[in-house]
Amino acid sequence: MKRRELLGLLGGAGLGWSALSGSALAASPANEAGRQRVVIVGGAWAGLSAARELRLRAPELDVLVIDREPVLRALPLSTPWLVDRTPERMPGLDRSVLAAQLGYRFVAADVQRIDRAQRSIVTAQDGTYAYDWLLVATGVSYDYSAWFGADTQAAQAAQALYPAGFVASELDLLKARLQTFTGGNLLINVPASPNRCPPAPYERAMLLAWWLKSRHIKGKVTVLDAGGGMPRFTRLFGERYPDHIDFQPHTAIRAVDPFARTVSTDDGDVHFDHAMLLPPMRASAVVEQAGLLGQDAQGKPTRWAGVDPLRLRALQDERVYLAGDLLDTVSPLFGHYPKTAHMATRLGVAAAQQIAARSRNGASATEPPLNLPHSVCHVWLDADPAEQLRIETQYRLRGDGLITQAVSQHDNPQPRGEDLQWGLGLVADALGAKPGS
Image (cartoon, rainbow, N blue to C red; front, top):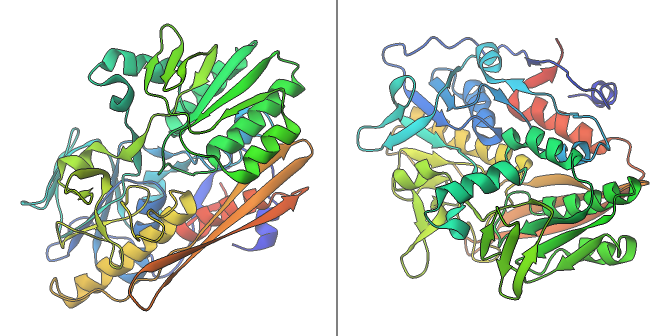
């Protein structure tokens, strides 16, 4: 996408989207005899990026994307919108329209089960879909059992009353509840890593503090961080909002009582007047059902999908590939890839390239060398005057076969919409959509 096209859209809201044109993106007839079938479970950043890449690289394949939601609502750039600092600048994307224009198929359905023995996907709405190659890109899920065990009533109450806002369907409810906050203790928490978009809770704390201060609301933001925090943010908490942010590092939530509005920590109970309760994260339930979880050093299942980091293939099945936030550790040097939108698109593209190569060369063929991903994200450091931070993460393969990570941070005082340029560019370049009616 050209820079001038993006600049013309800064601050725009409610925009429609259409697919980028291209002769390689011919329409894909449904299930023609003899065509190899690729099913992608999960239609967000990783899944849609993979679908577009498969149509570009292997138009002979029949590609189907399955996701329970018909519209993709982008989470990047949502926090400034939550506190009325900006409009919602990333419009929704109709998955069925995008699929029709780019030449793959889309089904809005809830995947109940992956049957790897039969190479099929069982959905609640439309029955069963067979595959030759499967890409699982279901992102992250909340693990409320860490707080509530089998008490589903309390877990449902916590999500309904105090949504974390890391799932798009929670955003409107979260904003509505914020508008009714009149003061007191506004609690947010940062669970033990890995989490989706690691800087996001700290960005949110900073902007919430600005929101309280600018609206003259008598209250504070209490941040309970299971880890040690991000140094850049924790320093700014003390320098800029000492009266509005109470940052408590190494303080994990052990239990939650959503009815009494208290959380329990190793240092005692904390009462809140309102909260954004973010439970530990994990891969989706269907990943566990399919037997795709990784294992720790003791042989116990982890919370994430076990993956060959140089092929993005599931450890348990050569016909199954994985991409996006659900991945387990990829290197003993740093652990997980950051679980961000940009990273998910790069992993989706890389997985699609692996599938395209093996579909043409045979199931016994070796995948080509993986194009290692990279990641960029933009976060707000303060709202007025506006100040942002761009975080870039690069990867390379060492001589001993291990992946290394290098992170750099770049200050962006008085930004001119670079975060929106990045977001719209990501949608255009990775997903194949462009602004337009």
